[in-house]
Image (cartoon, rainbow, N blue to C red):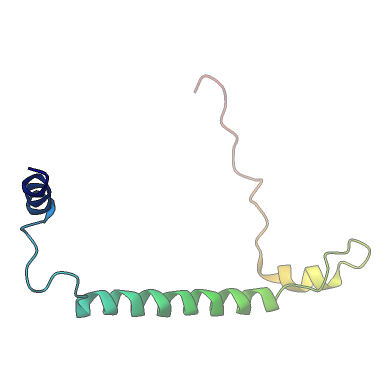
Length: 87
């Protein structure tokens, strides 16, 4: 009786949907992994380029390095009309 029960449990536990290619990786998965690795490399490379442009320190006593980096920024436009209440 125990052997028959074990045989039934073993047969029921097997997944019948498995084909001969079960467990094999597809070439499409390799393409995805390679593209993710290339994207990660490009992001790290770009981040390092941007970090090199930062000043050594953000010391307020000597703001010259900070001003050199900030030359391309635009001041906010304070001349536009403010929203009035009720309108």
